[in-house]
Length: 193
Image (cartoon, rainbow, N blue to C red; front, side, top):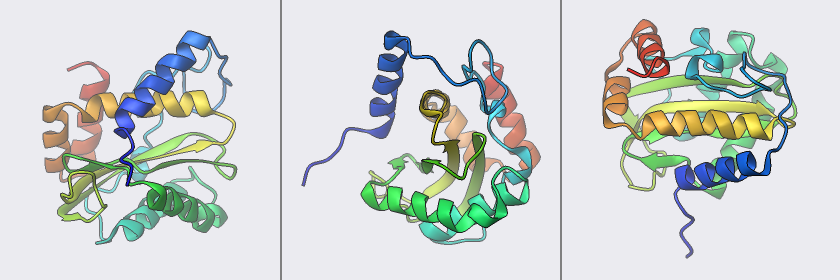
């Protein structure tokens, strides 16, 4: 069995390669600066879809709950939920996005997604996400991107992972029991606090 490199390292390397190659980005999707560059979590996290108390108790259920929340907030077409969930589950079957330390970042680029959108879900009891460290996942950051925005997808993933690598951010996210507490934490992270 070959163990792939950590997802954060792979994404960071891809983002650096893309910047070095000077690839142009499509200027669509979330609010952006300078030719589509994403610089803050709140530019793609949909507040109305944040779920501070996940009801699902398994990986696939959590993915469905979060995609459904994004659809309810108007960020994903309601008739695309099943397709997007299936793509995310397939991605998880190819390799878990539970990178350890109680966090998972399910993500996919999909033709039915018109604008980049993300959300955050929190489970007080923890979820088996087949994480790399074999520990339960308590915080889930889900990201959906259009098929034609790979550079923005990588930029968003880089922002997510740079914050999730911080012990303090993970600890406060795990303890944030309300949507307001989660949005406050995202605002603090975006302001560099």
